[in-house]
Image (cartoon, rainbow, N blue to C red):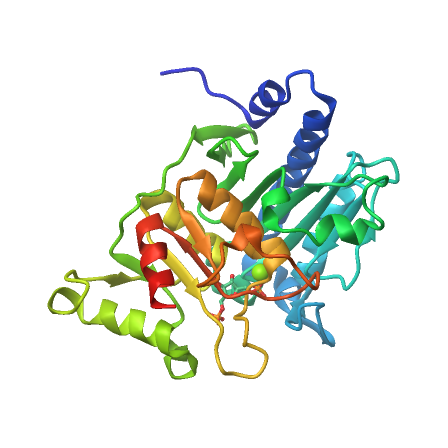
Length: 329
Ligand code: AHM
Ligand code: MG
């Protein structure tokens, strides 16, 4: 068997002697370490019942019910980043940017605990992160560093806390899967340069919303449901965990498409997912794995944000199928 590459070794090799890259590597290492602690808390499940409770009456910055564990996850990530050259943290759980390290030259955007509406059901939940450069000389404010199209990300990834704690990461040179070895605690490189198959027969969507969708989205799903006899000429399979990190990991493993379109329900005109800390990192990972990511009309990574917590319709996964879906729009 070939030598196992730890996350630390991978990061050191990638950074080489470059100070800018070393800063990114330190941020990723810190997030992964915070993730190990969050995974432990998640794994205690009902033993930590209080953590799955909804917090007070206030929704979070994105307008969702906030659970105790959402807040604890954010605190863990913030604490871990304090020792790194990260200037500011943007988070689903906080309205504004959180100052981290005044000397930092990076901003990190996170969904500290994606899929948290599922924490009491024992399915995978996870942490999503996006890293952007921050230059106080070029950016009038740290917010300007965050409010840029996703193609400016220097690194992105997610941790999924499931049967295995996994880290799917990109630094702009492919997408790689690391798995935490529970015997040593270390993350080990399990799959380098993941490639999402271009073609698929599997889609994931919350189909209970069909009556709220627009015509192109309805048309696409109708054609999938028609199977071999329909215009697509093949039978489809449907999979939906309802926890994006888990659905994304399936797609990185065997292909497929994830869809969360905009719909007519109040507050869902742009779907459910947040552009800056959900869609952008997943789109970066997907493109680096030879897949595609779109809002139906525009490449996700080219969309200029207008609000830190804005939502965006999201379709990502197998490239040919994503193009197929875009063709309905
Ligand atoms: P969250 O960040 O509040 O957890 O919301 C995002 C989640 C995704 O993980 C998941 O794919 C989607 O919301 C599920 O939405 P729905 O409950 O409509 O199926
Ligand atoms: Mg989320």
